[in-house]
Amino acid sequence: MSVESPALEWFLTLKKGNPGERARLRRCHSRSSALAEPAAIQLAQRLGLLTATSRADGEAIGAAIDLARVLAHVKEHTGKKRVMQSAGWKTFAGNRKESDAGADRPLLSETRFRRLLTTEGGEPLVAAFTRLIRQLNGEVNVTDLANAFLSWTHDTRGQKIRNTWAFDYYAAGNPASTNTETPTEPEAAL
Image 1: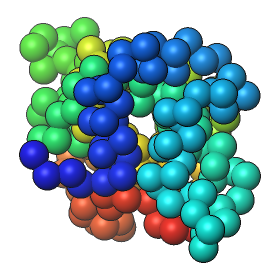
Image 2: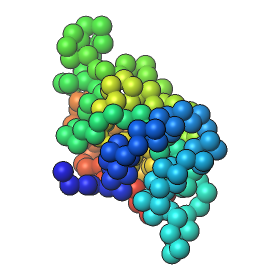
Image 3: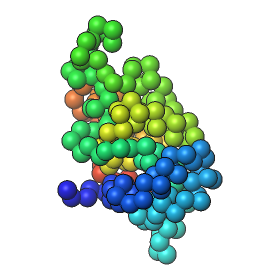
Image 4: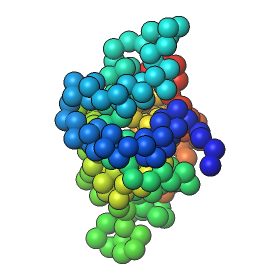
């Protein structure tokens, strides 16, 4: 398997390593507690936020530390589908209701999906992404999830992510106003 992103590389290393590291990160209920975990710092390093030539701002470093807490809940990387393609409707929802969908019903309810789209950064975002991972039984595309999480609060990239997620959730194809592919890595200016 080729490694697509620093976040995926970090996840695969963490998964193969000491299981206690992932467990400690899962138990971190704040950014401050995660700062005491070397594995969280390693993710910020892999993302290039702690190098001598790159001095990222505190917000970008904090987002990387929070991302470590979120990714600690992932059990398996599934590189086949983007996150909302896995969580949403299997075919275009149209006017159907979830209660009438049968096997086509999304794993993530529309109510939770709507709430996720309006979630701001910080602890509410960590909680929302952690719930999303649970809804997907711990099986997600780590690269897509990491990119979305790190871009979520950015004015332009965050809206592109939300647009793509909405079209993916409703199995409606790709939004015409955004890139058809979600970037595999967040842009340098987190």
